[in-house]
Image (tube, rainbow, N blue to C red; front, side, top):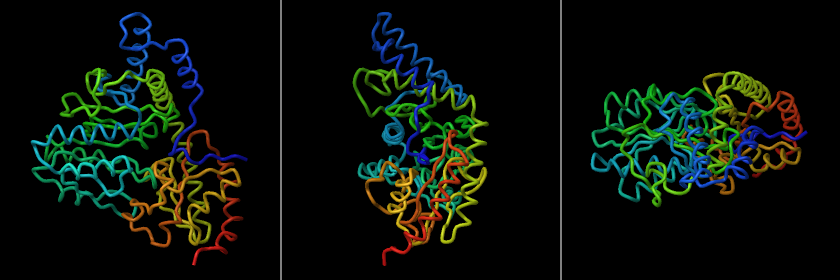
Length: 384
């Protein structure tokens, strides 16, 4: 049996997206900036994708801008808004459990002279509201927060955060990294007072190299890519029409079946958590039910390094992650796990299982069966 439990790293492109992307690449391949009909046909795919995505967020299609993925969207949101609002202040607030595409960008802002405040989290990875309240000052210009943590599935209270920010400092920009939440739950930027929101296509059965950023109308933000002025000057460069069409289709598919798919995935998550908690020496970092993301389970395996367990399961046809795939080839201790106060002995013994609607309970049964066989053997060779 082959089991793919690494859907937070990337998902398989859906059949409907595959079909559309191939059609755009081979038939409607024009440059959307061209004035002839071949270009006009290509441009229609961009508008249709904007409309599909806007419907899922209940926003104006003109507020959707396409990027190469989540990393670019996060960079554009953070650097663009910080630079645009520098006259109003110098303080930027984020959390201690951000994805590397945010954390590294914050380090860049520090090098540019901005003050960055990193909010602590509780043992479940959820930001402490009192810490945000203490961090907000008159010179705060941006708050950037991940919605669903990519390692443990912690859900941040973005509606509470957004409403608080706009109540005390209406001009502060609120950016949300929704790369692990979009397509898994309802998100309403207007209800949450979100100004900027980042999404990646390959997390929702869309093509790699596709993404978008929601930019609320009249949000003060500067471009970070310059050239021909495409997309109203916010993101220059010839649009990746196949990728844009693909992410638009993937967004439509996700939200047409959202409740059905997420009920299924949540059931898988809870089923795996129950099974893991029954195994000696296993600590689960993710929460069951609606308290955690529906598709992510993080667990520490006492006495077994995560990389060793990953490859042992791989030999059995089971594919998981030792952390964020974006840094999986750089063996560093997870900042998220450290911020959560995870036991030191488990920091390099934690892995992530992540699901999509195509996974099954039978796959979980097989995985748990293999874990029960492998763990006693691997623990015999634990590092002293």
